[in-house]
Length: 495
Image 1 (cartoon, rainbow, N blue to C red):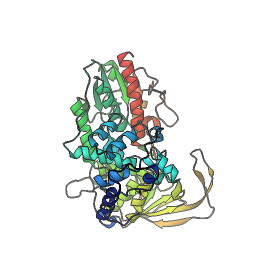
Image 2 (image 1 turned 90 degrees about the vertical axis):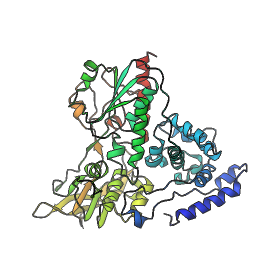
Image 3 (image 1 turned 120 degrees about the vertical axis):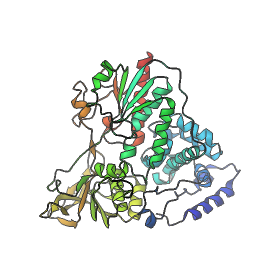
Image 4 (image 1 turned 30 degrees about the vertical axis):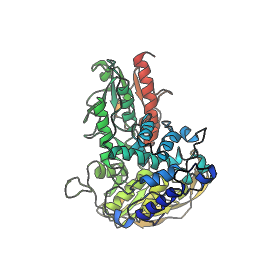
């Protein structure tokens, strides 16, 4: 974790850039260029604001970071990208100061670069495959592909925005897209590009899916999501909000009565899981989903302008180690909690959350309790949370996920005093669509089963994203959407 100011980072970047500007760099010289840190707000200040934590690269920082790319002929980074962005090409364009070309290359396969550049776990995808990281034997030293993607996307947004993708002549075919999250946005954009009429059906009053109700403002400003939704509208995509498929309209009726030629289900995985332990019904226990939705979509943090009720925490426990757990913990900090504890039954190494998010949480004062897990939630005579009784663990052999399995240590109970517990141990798919559509085949977790093309067991019905994968990432959901959109287009066009 760096203590350098934005001004210091910029001065270092300017100095480095001047040292090799206009030179043909060798592989050795490129490898000697240090990775550029991301400028960010001071932790002591950002604890009290919902504004975005990181500032993004300056032009000098982006060009220095781009110069670290080795332009590998086999481009392993592309293989690591779920939507297969031509990563070396867009980075080369940055190095050459061809920023319009750079964003155009990205948008060939990714309609949400400003979003993906902020929230996708590049260290486990494109950057994990990066040759530079392999040279240093550390994926955290790879070329900062996500930060560079964000740089060109933000630059395009700042300079009169990005033109909406071109749309081919109308085909007369109509597609219903259920949900407005990353998978659905990708499907809608790809199919509209091909000239098909697209109608998106959103259960909430505001489109954007998990990017709006799940990811906090300090990590992903909602204005960016709104801009991407506007791009779809400019392309001619219709968006209907407060439309709950399964209640407002059954899935089968969208084809039989409303005349849609195909349907894509991208309704996500928004049904929170709970631990099933004693005390989960006490006052002060919430799913991280509900807590974040109240804060993010309903702006409970803005007490002067929003009337959304939200539990005021004093001492908080967050159960889980993923990105949602980090979002919940850091939101609790900003809502005035005196103490926030993350309880995770493995070690930091096994945490699925992004390293950057864990670092930011620590900087903001969040306490981590590794190798511990709640046994029961303690309450007082009024039924309110007063503490968590935890068990301690040690790591055993790896489980099916490849992570070492936590093994309980007998007689290791201990108590942490809290008044709020946020449960963030994953999500299941909401059962409404599948319960009202028995023809849809699902697995034991309630996820819709599809083939390799995104096709479901129902004719003309496709699915992708979290409703198929379970809780995943924005970019993985987009990859699923791209695959399904191609399949739908082939069916509608008879190719």
